Length: 229
DNA sequence: GCGACAG
DNA sequence: ATCTTGTCGC
Image 1 (cartoon, rainbow, N blue to C red):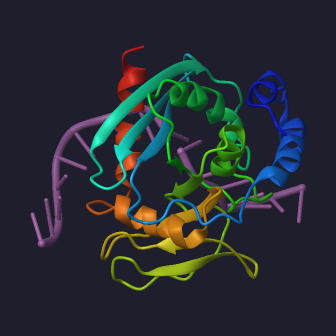
Image 2 (image 1 turned 180 degrees about the vertical axis):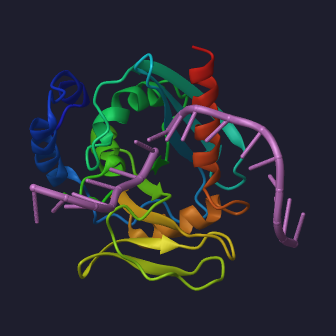
């Protein structure tokens, strides 16, 4: 099995090492579990980070919402040094250490974690959400604002409409219209959750705005945490 | 070689 | 991600 602490101690020093880590850890992703059922009782946690390039500082936030009411029930932040440059396909190495610190500050174990980015929809099928899922063992999904390098046809105009997000002929995620007449978000599976439920949870979390409340809350909190550092 | 490229 | 005011529209 993989050890979260060992992975953090053996952090890659360059891009080729990082890709090797992804190729090794991807085998631990579980795609055979449906994940929490829609309407489940528990907490959904949103995670996000903000950067201060001038000081090389990164602030992460984890915000826990009641999965049914979407009320905020817990939150935590962490601050760290940037541990990796931004390279498309290697985003996780930039965000994960500080995100793990923030998650550790929560009172309860999350039942589902929503990441800002991708899971399976990744050049090596191991995006941020999958990586975080494998290191924590928690069910994770990724909800991104852009289609990255993938192709899609616009989903229908109504809220809830979806279309496949394609890497060639392979469906790596879904474009999901969370609000009528608004650009879709891009959902992919991270770890221990199926795509249907990943989309259902995202739609429930995005009842009022384009982005899930988890992402909005975490985004807002990590910006405040960065500003007060 | 060139362009594209989650956050 | 981040730099950043006003402004168009419901």
